Each structure stands twice: as C-alpha cells, then as structure tokens.
Length: 98
Image 1: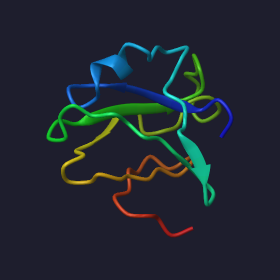
Image 2: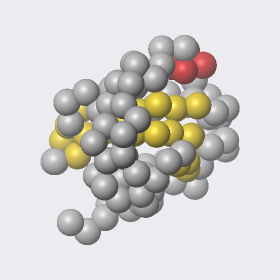
Image 3: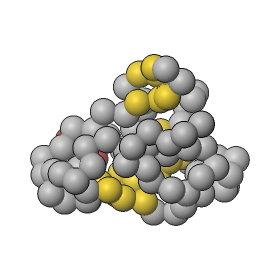
Image 4: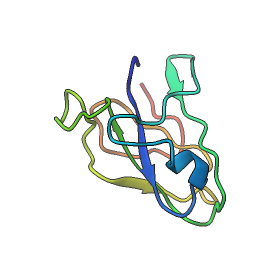
C-alpha cells in the first residue's frame, strides 16, 4: 500500500482533515489489516457525500499512480464502510469477493 492515499473533498469530511490534504499529500491509511488498507475518515456530516480519489502523492497516471474510476463518492449514512479494489472503478458497499 506504500504511499497510496485518499484525496478527499466535500461537506462530510472534517475541515481540519481537508486542510491537511493536498494533491502531493493524500490522506494516508490508518492501518493495514487482513490484506486491506483501512482509512478512517473523520466526518462532520454523515448525510453529505465523501468524495475521493485514490492516488500516490502527485500521481495522475491511471493505473500506475492513480486508480481508475475518476471522482468517486459515497454517503456515510447509507454506507459507513466502503471497499475499493485495485484496478476496479466500483465502490463496493460490502466486502467484494476476491
């Protein structure tokens, strides 16, 4: 998982977190567990979308330094956990089958 991280924006994410994120400084994983990198995202409004792009710092080359799928999002109130799989643009609301 190395340096991969989340670039996030929108009204759901805590502004203090958003202030720390830049294209060259994405939000890092909180932990790697059971083969998954997990990202805890501090929220201020679970009814607003979390918008995100998964990428390496300053990475903008799909699929080498930026995941496919472009701008993605989810509503935390409906799906408090989501999963993405490398190379797959789908945002899964339950663990995908390997």
